[in-house]
Image 1: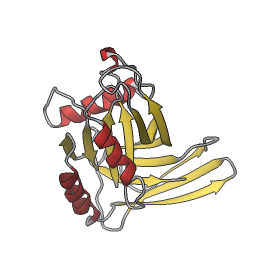
Image 2: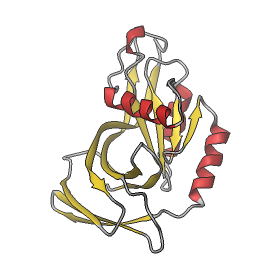
Image 3: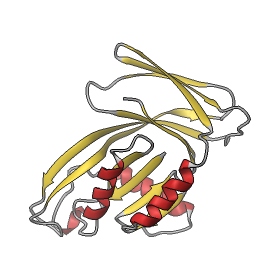
Amino acid sequence: MLVELYTSQGCSSCPPADAMIAELAQRDDVLPLALHVDYWDYIGWADGFARAQHTKRQKAYARMVHSTSIYTPQIVVEGTDQVIGVKPMKLADLIAIHRSELTPVAIDVEFDGDTIRVRCAPEAGRDLPRNINVDLVHFTETETVEILHGENAGKTISYANIVTGWDRVGSWDGDGEFAFSAELPQDGPLALVIQAAGPGEVLGAFRLR
């Protein structure tokens, strides 16, 4: 299950949400990812984890609900449910709801030295969307940052599952098998995200290593 947090080191409202992601990172049934955005960098502290790609993805989610506004912190669960602010009970309820749903995509993973081979296929009896993105996500498990300026000046904050790269493997029509191979990174964890284009519903999110 994919839980995305849109966050910034320059946002004073974000540390409690960052802590929630760190707590979720201890679970095996959730893939929490922190995507640091760059639109707060102007207020005194440039977030070293921020990427314009993350801001672009958050804006795409806003368009999916016919909004032009983006906020931090924001959590997106399985590509479909959005939570603005720090609302742990609402987040827990959404995770429980999505946990009760069966993943519509099955994957098979093989490791061969520095190469990973992945095969994806619909679970029996499941109809998938016709336009699906298959992505590999690189992330860092934990980093601690001393923030010297901006809204969080003077704080030392620990961050978990910080996205460092979100790369498109290919597009899939959801019919039959989708297979690919990729070179493994030298270090750091790697995840696979299978998601309806839009971005829309997450059809599968798997930590590969």
